[in-house]
Length: 447
Image 1 (tube, helix red, strand yellow):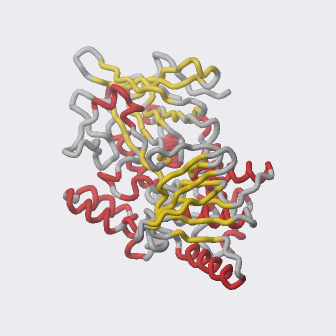
Image 2 (cartoon, one colour; image 1 turned 135 degrees about the vertical axis):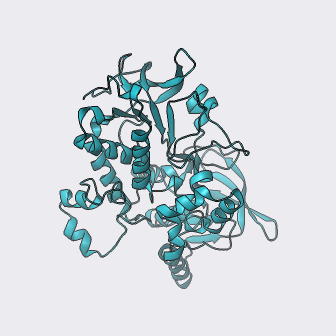
Image 3 (cartoon, helix red, strand yellow; image 1 turned 45 degrees about the vertical axis):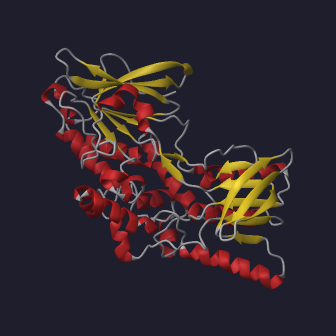
Protein backbone atom coordinates (compact mmCIF):
# COMPACT_ATOMS: atom_id res chain seq x y z
CA UNK A 1 0.00 0.00 0.00
CA UNK A 2 1.36 3.41 -0.98
CA UNK A 3 1.70 5.81 1.92
CA UNK A 4 2.66 9.42 2.33
CA UNK A 5 5.97 9.97 4.08
CA UNK A 6 5.90 10.75 7.79
CA UNK A 7 8.49 11.31 10.48
CA UNK A 8 10.01 14.05 12.63
CA UNK A 9 12.36 15.25 9.88
CA UNK A 10 9.67 15.54 7.20
CA UNK A 11 7.77 18.81 6.99
CA UNK A 12 5.07 19.32 4.37
CA UNK A 13 4.50 22.72 2.83
CA UNK A 14 0.81 21.81 2.61
CA UNK A 15 -1.28 18.94 3.92
CA UNK A 16 -4.80 18.72 2.58
CA UNK A 17 -7.54 17.30 4.78
CA UNK A 18 -10.07 15.72 2.46
CA UNK A 19 -9.50 14.76 -1.17
CA UNK A 20 -12.65 15.65 -3.04
CA UNK A 21 -12.76 17.88 -6.13
CA UNK A 22 -11.51 21.01 -4.32
CA UNK A 23 -8.31 19.54 -2.91
CA UNK A 24 -7.89 17.44 -6.04
CA UNK A 25 -7.75 20.67 -8.06
CA UNK A 26 -5.15 22.03 -5.63
CA UNK A 27 -3.11 18.82 -5.88
CA UNK A 28 -3.05 19.14 -9.66
CA UNK A 29 -1.98 22.80 -9.49
CA UNK A 30 0.87 21.88 -7.15
CA UNK A 31 1.91 18.85 -9.18
CA UNK A 32 2.04 20.92 -12.38
CA UNK A 33 4.05 23.59 -10.53
CA UNK A 34 6.52 21.00 -9.22
CA UNK A 35 7.01 19.51 -12.68
CA UNK A 36 8.34 22.87 -13.94
CA UNK A 37 10.02 24.22 -10.79
CA UNK A 38 13.61 23.92 -9.69
CA UNK A 39 14.19 21.57 -6.72
CA UNK A 40 14.26 24.45 -4.24
CA UNK A 41 11.00 25.89 -5.56
CA UNK A 42 8.96 22.70 -5.31
CA UNK A 43 6.23 22.28 -2.74
CA UNK A 44 6.03 19.16 -0.60
CA UNK A 45 2.33 18.34 -0.57
CA UNK A 46 0.14 15.53 0.68
CA UNK A 47 -3.60 14.94 0.95
CA UNK A 48 -5.39 12.75 3.47
CA UNK A 49 -8.78 11.20 2.66
CA UNK A 50 -10.89 9.05 4.97
CA UNK A 51 -12.61 7.17 2.12
CA UNK A 52 -10.83 4.08 0.72
CA UNK A 53 -10.99 5.47 -2.83
CA UNK A 54 -11.91 8.72 -4.52
CA UNK A 55 -15.66 9.38 -4.36
CA UNK A 56 -17.92 12.38 -5.00
CA UNK A 57 -21.65 12.08 -4.27
CA UNK A 58 -21.61 8.47 -5.41
CA UNK A 59 -25.09 7.87 -4.02
CA UNK A 60 -26.62 10.31 -6.52
CA UNK A 61 -24.93 9.04 -9.68
CA UNK A 62 -28.24 8.34 -11.40
CA UNK A 63 -27.56 6.88 -14.82
CA UNK A 64 -29.05 9.76 -16.84
CA UNK A 65 -28.46 12.67 -14.43
CA UNK A 66 -26.40 15.49 -15.91
CA UNK A 67 -24.15 18.13 -14.42
CA UNK A 68 -25.58 21.57 -13.67
CA UNK A 69 -22.26 23.28 -14.38
CA UNK A 70 -20.41 23.55 -17.68
CA UNK A 71 -17.65 21.02 -18.34
CA UNK A 72 -15.36 24.01 -18.91
CA UNK A 73 -15.57 24.66 -15.18
CA UNK A 74 -13.61 21.48 -14.54
CA UNK A 75 -10.59 21.04 -12.29
CA UNK A 76 -8.18 23.15 -14.36
CA UNK A 77 -9.53 25.00 -17.39
CA UNK A 78 -10.44 28.28 -15.68
CA UNK A 79 -6.91 28.30 -14.19
CA UNK A 80 -4.97 27.02 -17.20
CA UNK A 81 -6.80 26.09 -20.42
CA UNK A 82 -3.65 24.35 -21.68
CA UNK A 83 -3.53 21.85 -18.80
CA UNK A 84 -3.74 18.20 -19.81
CA UNK A 85 -5.93 17.54 -16.75
CA UNK A 86 -8.96 19.09 -18.45
CA UNK A 87 -12.23 17.32 -19.12
CA UNK A 88 -11.52 17.53 -22.86
CA UNK A 89 -8.18 15.76 -22.34
CA UNK A 90 -10.02 13.13 -20.32
CA UNK A 91 -12.46 12.62 -23.20
CA UNK A 92 -9.58 12.30 -25.65
CA UNK A 93 -7.95 9.72 -23.37
CA UNK A 94 -11.21 7.77 -23.15
CA UNK A 95 -11.76 7.93 -26.92
CA UNK A 96 -15.02 9.89 -26.67
CA UNK A 97 -13.99 13.44 -27.61
CA UNK A 98 -15.75 13.52 -31.00
CA UNK A 99 -18.77 11.67 -29.67
CA UNK A 100 -19.16 14.18 -26.84
CA UNK A 101 -18.81 17.18 -29.16
CA UNK A 102 -21.51 15.76 -31.43
CA UNK A 103 -23.97 16.02 -28.54
CA UNK A 104 -23.68 19.84 -28.64
CA UNK A 105 -23.98 20.15 -24.86
CA UNK A 106 -22.04 21.84 -22.09
CA UNK A 107 -23.38 19.45 -19.45
CA UNK A 108 -21.94 15.92 -19.26
CA UNK A 109 -23.51 13.02 -17.44
CA UNK A 110 -22.83 13.22 -13.73
CA UNK A 111 -21.45 9.66 -13.80
CA UNK A 112 -19.08 10.69 -16.60
CA UNK A 113 -17.83 13.73 -14.67
CA UNK A 114 -17.24 11.47 -11.67
CA UNK A 115 -15.16 9.20 -13.89
CA UNK A 116 -13.22 12.29 -14.98
CA UNK A 117 -12.50 13.12 -11.33
CA UNK A 118 -11.32 9.54 -10.74
CA UNK A 119 -9.11 9.72 -13.84
CA UNK A 120 -7.50 12.94 -12.57
CA UNK A 121 -7.16 11.63 -9.01
CA UNK A 122 -5.35 8.52 -10.26
CA UNK A 123 -2.75 10.73 -11.97
CA UNK A 124 -1.86 12.47 -8.69
CA UNK A 125 -2.18 9.29 -6.63
CA UNK A 126 1.35 9.81 -5.29
CA UNK A 127 0.14 12.87 -3.40
CA UNK A 128 -2.83 11.22 -1.69
CA UNK A 129 -3.33 8.80 1.17
CA UNK A 130 -6.72 7.08 1.32
CA UNK A 131 -8.32 5.40 4.35
CA UNK A 132 -6.55 8.02 6.44
CA UNK A 133 -9.19 9.75 8.55
CA UNK A 134 -7.82 12.84 10.29
CA UNK A 135 -8.59 12.73 14.00
CA UNK A 136 -6.84 15.88 15.22
CA UNK A 137 -4.74 18.86 14.21
CA UNK A 138 -2.35 20.12 16.88
CA UNK A 139 -0.44 23.43 16.81
CA UNK A 140 3.34 23.17 17.25
CA UNK A 141 4.90 26.15 19.05
CA UNK A 142 8.66 26.75 19.07
CA UNK A 143 10.67 28.61 21.74
CA UNK A 144 9.74 32.27 21.57
CA UNK A 145 6.03 31.56 21.15
CA UNK A 146 5.80 31.20 17.36
CA UNK A 147 3.32 28.56 16.16
CA UNK A 148 5.24 27.42 13.11
CA UNK A 149 3.66 24.08 12.19
CA UNK A 150 0.65 21.85 12.65
CA UNK A 151 0.84 18.16 13.50
CA UNK A 152 -1.88 16.37 11.57
CA UNK A 153 -2.87 13.08 13.19
CA UNK A 154 -4.64 10.49 11.02
CA UNK A 155 -5.55 6.83 11.26
CA UNK A 156 -3.03 4.40 9.82
CA UNK A 157 -4.61 2.72 6.75
CA UNK A 158 -2.76 -0.50 7.59
CA UNK A 159 -4.03 -0.55 11.17
CA UNK A 160 -6.89 1.87 12.04
CA UNK A 161 -6.20 1.38 15.75
CA UNK A 162 -2.90 3.23 15.26
CA UNK A 163 -2.32 6.81 14.19
CA UNK A 164 0.28 8.56 12.05
CA UNK A 165 1.54 12.10 12.67
CA UNK A 166 2.61 14.36 9.81
CA UNK A 167 3.92 17.89 10.30
CA UNK A 168 2.96 20.74 7.96
CA UNK A 169 3.57 24.45 7.54
CA UNK A 170 0.05 24.79 6.14
CA UNK A 171 -3.13 22.77 6.04
CA UNK A 172 -6.01 23.03 3.59
CA UNK A 173 -9.36 21.83 4.92
CA UNK A 174 -11.77 20.61 2.24
CA UNK A 175 -13.96 18.05 3.95
CA UNK A 176 -17.09 18.81 1.94
CA UNK A 177 -20.66 18.91 3.14
CA UNK A 178 -22.59 16.53 5.36
CA UNK A 179 -26.23 15.43 4.91
CA UNK A 180 -28.76 17.64 6.65
CA UNK A 181 -31.77 15.95 8.25
CA UNK A 182 -34.84 17.32 10.04
CA UNK A 183 -34.53 17.27 13.86
CA UNK A 184 -35.42 13.92 15.37
CA UNK A 185 -34.95 11.94 12.15
CA UNK A 186 -34.11 8.29 12.79
CA UNK A 187 -32.42 6.66 9.81
CA UNK A 188 -33.15 3.01 9.02
CA UNK A 189 -33.53 0.56 6.15
CA UNK A 190 -36.71 2.43 5.22
CA UNK A 191 -35.66 6.00 6.04
CA UNK A 192 -32.62 7.45 4.24
CA UNK A 193 -31.00 10.65 3.12
CA UNK A 194 -30.93 11.00 -0.67
CA UNK A 195 -27.11 10.79 -0.60
CA UNK A 196 -27.67 7.01 -0.34
CA UNK A 197 -30.30 6.83 -3.08
CA UNK A 198 -28.63 4.76 -5.81
CA UNK A 199 -27.05 2.03 -3.63
CA UNK A 200 -30.18 1.75 -1.48
CA UNK A 201 -32.42 1.35 -4.50
CA UNK A 202 -30.00 -1.17 -6.01
CA UNK A 203 -30.15 -3.20 -2.81
CA UNK A 204 -33.94 -3.22 -2.78
CA UNK A 205 -34.09 -4.17 -6.45
CA UNK A 206 -31.59 -7.00 -5.99
CA UNK A 207 -33.50 -8.38 -3.02
CA UNK A 208 -36.83 -8.27 -4.84
CA UNK A 209 -38.39 -6.18 -2.05
CA UNK A 210 -41.84 -4.81 -2.80
CA UNK A 211 -42.26 -1.05 -2.74
CA UNK A 212 -45.88 0.06 -2.73
CA UNK A 213 -45.41 3.69 -1.76
CA UNK A 214 -42.36 5.92 -1.40
CA UNK A 215 -42.24 9.47 -0.06
CA UNK A 216 -39.59 12.06 -0.92
CA UNK A 217 -39.27 15.12 1.31
CA UNK A 218 -37.72 18.18 -0.33
CA UNK A 219 -38.15 20.67 -3.16
CA UNK A 220 -34.67 20.98 -4.69
CA UNK A 221 -32.90 19.36 -7.61
CA UNK A 222 -31.91 16.26 -5.68
CA UNK A 223 -35.46 15.80 -4.42
CA UNK A 224 -36.93 16.06 -7.92
CA UNK A 225 -34.30 13.66 -9.26
CA UNK A 226 -35.09 11.19 -6.47
CA UNK A 227 -38.82 11.40 -7.23
CA UNK A 228 -38.19 10.76 -10.91
CA UNK A 229 -35.73 7.93 -10.24
CA UNK A 230 -38.00 6.11 -7.79
CA UNK A 231 -40.98 6.51 -10.12
CA UNK A 232 -39.04 5.02 -13.04
CA UNK A 233 -37.45 2.24 -11.00
CA UNK A 234 -40.41 0.95 -8.99
CA UNK A 235 -42.97 0.86 -11.76
CA UNK A 236 -45.76 -0.44 -9.52
CA UNK A 237 -45.22 2.04 -6.70
CA UNK A 238 -46.88 5.32 -5.83
CA UNK A 239 -44.29 8.05 -5.36
CA UNK A 240 -45.25 11.10 -3.32
CA UNK A 241 -43.26 14.34 -3.37
CA UNK A 242 -43.75 16.29 -0.13
CA UNK A 243 -42.73 19.95 0.05
CA UNK A 244 -43.89 23.21 1.61
CA UNK A 245 -43.88 25.15 -1.66
CA UNK A 246 -46.82 25.30 -4.05
CA UNK A 247 -44.65 23.85 -6.79
CA UNK A 248 -41.04 23.27 -7.72
CA UNK A 249 -39.12 26.51 -8.33
CA UNK A 250 -37.08 26.69 -11.56
CA UNK A 251 -33.36 27.23 -11.18
CA UNK A 252 -32.28 30.64 -12.43
CA UNK A 253 -29.50 29.81 -14.87
CA UNK A 254 -29.95 32.91 -17.02
CA UNK A 255 -26.72 34.52 -18.25
CA UNK A 256 -26.78 37.62 -16.06
CA UNK A 257 -27.74 35.72 -12.91
CA UNK A 258 -24.99 33.19 -13.62
CA UNK A 259 -22.43 35.96 -13.34
CA UNK A 260 -22.73 35.51 -9.56
CA UNK A 261 -20.45 32.49 -10.16
CA UNK A 262 -17.78 34.49 -12.02
CA UNK A 263 -14.39 34.87 -10.31
CA UNK A 264 -14.87 38.65 -10.27
CA UNK A 265 -18.10 38.22 -8.31
CA UNK A 266 -16.10 36.66 -5.48
CA UNK A 267 -13.99 39.82 -5.29
CA UNK A 268 -17.09 42.02 -5.10
CA UNK A 269 -18.75 39.82 -2.51
CA UNK A 270 -15.64 39.64 -0.35
CA UNK A 271 -15.22 43.42 -0.15
CA UNK A 272 -18.93 44.24 0.24
CA UNK A 273 -20.39 45.43 3.58
CA UNK A 274 -22.23 42.76 5.61
CA UNK A 275 -25.68 44.03 4.63
CA UNK A 276 -24.79 43.89 0.92
CA UNK A 277 -23.44 40.37 1.34
CA UNK A 278 -26.76 39.30 2.87
CA UNK A 279 -28.73 40.93 0.06
CA UNK A 280 -26.63 39.31 -2.66
CA UNK A 281 -26.95 35.93 -1.00
CA UNK A 282 -30.72 36.24 -0.64
CA UNK A 283 -31.23 37.60 -4.16
CA UNK A 284 -29.31 34.77 -5.80
CA UNK A 285 -30.19 31.74 -3.71
CA UNK A 286 -32.41 30.77 -6.64
CA UNK A 287 -29.34 29.95 -8.71
CA UNK A 288 -28.50 26.99 -6.48
CA UNK A 289 -30.68 26.30 -3.42
CA UNK A 290 -34.08 24.58 -3.39
CA UNK A 291 -34.51 24.95 -7.14
CA UNK A 292 -34.91 22.48 -10.01
CA UNK A 293 -33.87 22.44 -13.67
CA UNK A 294 -36.79 23.45 -15.85
CA UNK A 295 -36.45 20.36 -18.08
CA UNK A 296 -36.99 18.09 -15.07
CA UNK A 297 -39.92 20.15 -13.79
CA UNK A 298 -41.61 19.88 -17.18
CA UNK A 299 -40.90 16.14 -17.40
CA UNK A 300 -42.44 15.50 -13.97
CA UNK A 301 -45.48 17.59 -14.81
CA UNK A 302 -45.93 15.74 -18.09
CA UNK A 303 -45.82 12.47 -16.16
CA UNK A 304 -48.51 13.58 -13.71
CA UNK A 305 -50.74 14.75 -16.55
CA UNK A 306 -50.22 11.59 -18.58
CA UNK A 307 -51.16 9.49 -15.55
CA UNK A 308 -54.33 11.52 -15.04
CA UNK A 309 -55.30 10.87 -18.66
CA UNK A 310 -54.83 7.12 -18.21
CA UNK A 311 -56.55 7.07 -14.83
CA UNK A 312 -53.69 5.65 -12.78
CA UNK A 313 -51.89 8.32 -10.80
CA UNK A 314 -48.64 6.94 -9.37
CA UNK A 315 -46.85 10.29 -9.12
CA UNK A 316 -48.40 12.58 -6.51
CA UNK A 317 -47.38 16.11 -5.53
CA UNK A 318 -48.21 16.73 -1.87
CA UNK A 319 -47.51 20.44 -2.08
CA UNK A 320 -47.88 23.06 0.67
CA UNK A 321 -47.33 20.20 3.10
CA UNK A 322 -44.96 19.06 5.78
CA UNK A 323 -44.18 15.75 7.44
CA UNK A 324 -45.18 15.96 11.09
CA UNK A 325 -44.52 12.45 12.37
CA UNK A 326 -42.90 9.21 11.26
CA UNK A 327 -43.63 5.88 12.95
CA UNK A 328 -41.55 2.84 12.06
CA UNK A 329 -43.44 -0.43 12.35
CA UNK A 330 -42.26 -3.95 11.58
CA UNK A 331 -42.99 -3.95 7.86
CA UNK A 332 -43.87 -0.35 6.96
CA UNK A 333 -43.85 3.31 7.95
CA UNK A 334 -46.75 5.47 9.04
CA UNK A 335 -46.04 9.02 7.94
CA UNK A 336 -48.24 11.90 9.07
CA UNK A 337 -48.44 14.65 6.45
CA UNK A 338 -50.02 18.02 7.25
CA UNK A 339 -51.62 20.16 4.54
CA UNK A 340 -50.53 23.58 5.75
CA UNK A 341 -53.40 25.82 4.53
CA UNK A 342 -56.03 23.85 6.47
CA UNK A 343 -53.99 21.99 9.07
CA UNK A 344 -55.55 18.72 7.92
CA UNK A 345 -53.37 15.73 8.71
CA UNK A 346 -53.25 12.47 6.78
CA UNK A 347 -51.46 9.29 7.80
CA UNK A 348 -49.87 7.56 4.83
CA UNK A 349 -48.63 4.00 4.91
CA UNK A 350 -45.26 3.89 3.13
CA UNK A 351 -42.38 1.54 2.46
CA UNK A 352 -39.74 4.25 2.02
CA UNK A 353 -39.08 7.81 3.11
CA UNK A 354 -36.23 9.66 1.40
CA UNK A 355 -35.02 12.91 2.95
CA UNK A 356 -33.78 15.09 0.10
CA UNK A 357 -33.18 17.86 2.60
CA UNK A 358 -29.81 19.10 1.47
CA UNK A 359 -26.38 19.41 2.99
CA UNK A 360 -24.59 21.71 5.40
CA UNK A 361 -20.92 22.52 5.98
CA UNK A 362 -19.18 20.29 8.47
CA UNK A 363 -18.11 21.84 11.74
CA UNK A 364 -14.38 22.26 11.27
CA UNK A 365 -13.98 23.26 14.93
CA UNK A 366 -14.50 19.64 15.90
CA UNK A 367 -11.95 18.50 13.34
CA UNK A 368 -9.31 21.10 14.21
CA UNK A 369 -9.70 20.84 18.00
CA UNK A 370 -7.14 23.05 19.77
CA UNK A 371 -6.11 24.56 16.45
CA UNK A 372 -9.63 25.92 15.95
CA UNK A 373 -9.14 28.17 18.98
CA UNK A 374 -6.40 30.01 17.08
CA UNK A 375 -8.80 31.13 14.35
CA UNK A 376 -9.94 34.73 14.69
CA UNK A 377 -13.69 35.32 14.40
CA UNK A 378 -15.98 38.12 13.29
CA UNK A 379 -18.80 39.80 15.20
CA UNK A 380 -21.14 36.92 14.37
CA UNK A 381 -18.63 34.33 15.61
CA UNK A 382 -17.85 33.11 12.10
CA UNK A 383 -14.24 32.31 11.21
CA UNK A 384 -12.49 35.21 9.54
CA UNK A 385 -11.02 34.26 6.17
CA UNK A 386 -8.81 36.38 3.92
CA UNK A 387 -9.38 36.75 0.18
CA UNK A 388 -6.77 34.05 -0.56
CA UNK A 389 -8.88 31.55 1.47
CA UNK A 390 -6.37 31.68 4.33
CA UNK A 391 -7.86 31.85 7.83
CA UNK A 392 -6.99 35.00 9.75
CA UNK A 393 -4.72 34.00 12.66
CA UNK A 394 -2.86 35.89 15.40
CA UNK A 395 0.57 37.34 14.47
CA UNK A 396 2.43 34.69 16.46
CA UNK A 397 0.91 31.95 14.28
CA UNK A 398 2.95 31.73 11.08
CA UNK A 399 1.56 28.36 10.04
CA UNK A 400 -1.41 28.67 7.72
CA UNK A 401 -4.93 27.27 7.50
CA UNK A 402 -6.76 27.37 4.17
CA UNK A 403 -10.45 26.61 3.77
CA UNK A 404 -12.18 25.24 0.69
CA UNK A 405 -15.85 25.33 1.54
CA UNK A 406 -17.52 26.70 4.68
CA UNK A 407 -16.75 30.23 3.48
CA UNK A 408 -20.09 31.40 2.05
CA UNK A 409 -20.08 34.18 4.64
CA UNK A 410 -16.89 35.63 3.15
CA UNK A 411 -16.66 34.40 -0.45
CA UNK A 412 -20.29 33.90 -1.47
CA UNK A 413 -22.31 31.17 -3.12
CA UNK A 414 -19.40 29.57 -4.99
CA UNK A 415 -17.75 28.52 -1.74
CA UNK A 416 -19.24 25.02 -1.93
CA UNK A 417 -19.70 24.75 -5.70
CA UNK A 418 -17.58 23.57 -8.61
CA UNK A 419 -17.87 26.86 -10.50
CA UNK A 420 -14.65 28.42 -9.21
CA UNK A 421 -12.79 25.29 -8.10
CA UNK A 422 -9.91 25.76 -10.56
CA UNK A 423 -9.56 29.48 -9.77
CA UNK A 424 -9.63 28.83 -6.03
CA UNK A 425 -6.88 26.22 -6.39
CA UNK A 426 -4.76 28.79 -8.25
CA UNK A 427 -5.34 31.40 -5.55
CA UNK A 428 -4.34 29.01 -2.76
CA UNK A 429 -1.31 27.81 -4.70
CA UNK A 430 -0.19 31.41 -5.26
CA UNK A 431 -0.75 32.21 -1.59
CA UNK A 432 1.36 29.24 -0.52
CA UNK A 433 4.24 30.51 -2.62
CA UNK A 434 3.79 34.06 -1.35
CA UNK A 435 3.86 33.02 2.30
CA UNK A 436 6.98 30.88 2.03
CA UNK A 437 9.66 32.24 4.35
CA UNK A 438 13.45 31.93 4.21
CA UNK A 439 13.29 29.58 7.20
CA UNK A 440 10.83 27.39 5.33
CA UNK A 441 13.05 27.27 2.26
CA UNK A 442 16.16 26.40 4.21
CA UNK A 443 16.89 22.71 3.94
CA UNK A 444 13.79 22.22 1.81
CA UNK A 445 13.56 18.70 0.34
CA UNK A 446 14.53 18.37 -3.29
CA UNK A 447 12.15 15.56 -4.13
